[in-house]
Image 1 (cartoon, rainbow, N blue to C red):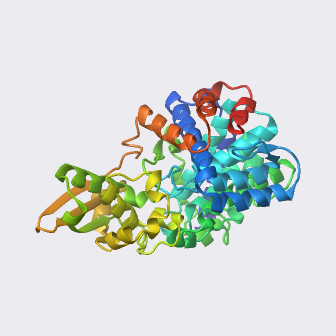
Image 2 (cartoon, rainbow, N blue to C red):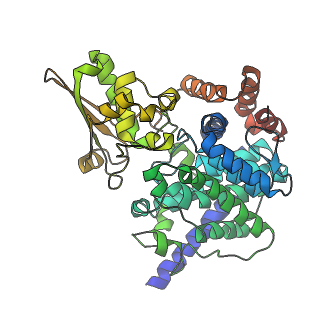
Image 3 (spheres, helix red, strand yellow):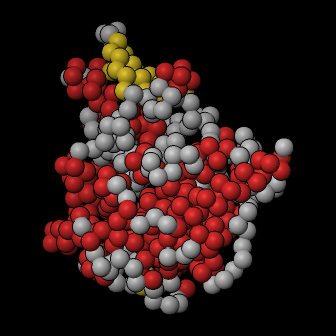
Length: 464
């Protein structure tokens, strides 16, 4: 019985690698190409803004990769420096994930845009590929991570940060497609990344550079695995399903054969279409609560002194997910539901400005956070099994209670940002670092990326 399951899983892993290697932009549905372009734009814009907003993370990683030297293969986001492709993936993936505004694949709770776009960009740059190759590589990365990730959830996330553990697999698939590797070498690249998977939930609890570094390290591992496969290494192609391989180590469910079931919809259902593009620069578990809080406060014209307390109920992700009443850094504040809901009530909005100027240390904000009670409610998961729902109850000092429930926040793939809303997000992000003409040039290249014969112009616009 175990041998049958193992063989079935091996066939699934091989089929997935073959599918990823064969993706061509011209053969993709128009909506898939459009979504992939949105994800590329969103990730790069987050990286451009992160360059300015998060120097405490960006500066050390840039110093590190620039000090390593090596071949001039791929560009760093913002600036004219070029480094070996894996180092570009390391730096760019990290920078994209600094401000927690990048996409999320909710079925796996993974931020795959950062490692996938960083690795795909570096691979296509190094190989002299086209914009169509970049789009295909991005789609391949999400397909592989999404299918494998679904097959190990929900148990996987109880210990592992999917952006790292599954992000390396995503990056390997993206890099392999960016280099134009065949199915056999793509499987080897994925195997290297799966064998080297890691990244605990520490960073998501504490909120330090390790969380951002997870995305960059994933890109590095993916590019490294793809380059080794390209160089002829015969790596661990069967590590996913091996008796002491990936599924054994990283899934509480522990059944390798589950992958086969996730492949039945290959080519008809696309993982990029399941990705959420964030409307708020913070932990996604807070998004529905933010929206509900703002709605109540605005509709009732509540002042700060009118609010006695706020109760937030959200689906169970893992124990004490996002519950931090004393964030010690900007990143920790982004990951704190009490902080995000507090500033939503105080400012009636949550944007990049709410995380500037040491707001997380402000005495008034800290005091108001204590009025926010967070409750993990498993019944919400039962009522909304595929949605990041939240209930918010605001109790006022006169004793009134106002209730709002949001099943899917703005930006969820079933309630996506409009083109105009996403354009405003991109312009806001790019405006932190680029001047107007440079931002417009970059957006122009991104709007027609699948038509670009090379990435020279796109990369050049990032270096201004």
